[in-house]
Image (cartoon, rainbow, N blue to C red):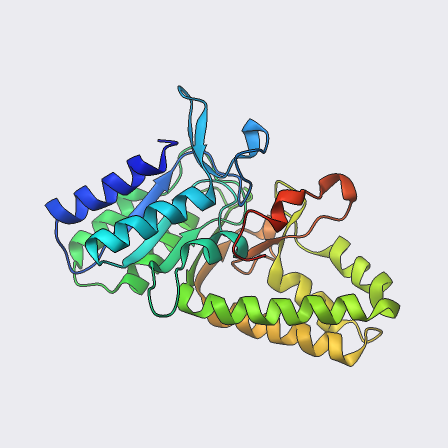
Length: 278
């Protein structure tokens, strides 16, 4: 499963043999967010092939989606990541496609790790068979709600759905926010404090984007330009995330994480070369 050609072939075969008004693709297995092939084995994107020792990087997932789209002419209504740590800006940006040629409309996944049982397919498919005319957004919301309901509320559980045609605008305001913070050298200490207080996940360099922006926006010691840029990020996240759920132990989750290491040790240079987002 670590070969993108296998994924492409599966998508094309499914659409050819089971034509439908709506299409959803769910990728299941281990997940690690955006990390690419040269990362350690434990941190290699998604769909780890235990026999071949391979995995699908986000570049490969996009390549398979792009090729299948070119062959079939179909945009996937939903891509689901039933895997750990995949619902992050860098990942959804990689699979969304472009305004004139969208690859996927909605992404569903978790900011945090997922328990081994994964999604509650029985509950979701029961709801779908009971209402086969439900919209993709309604199905995505159903997946989120069923997943959250299926686990012990004391566990670290997150799940969300993002509307990908709004992610490009989110990326634009993130860039403006980053530039504002970089320029405001006098605010770096306060920004660092906000970063240290932001909701973190299993890899502590993955943080909730909205919560970090919210902490910056609420700190009156930070310059107004930076706080305004943070507010724009909060608005864009709220617009893009159409369904979100979490347990109380990860209470400051809002649906999309971002890679933001606090130390040089946790900075991976391939971040700048392996992603469309960067």
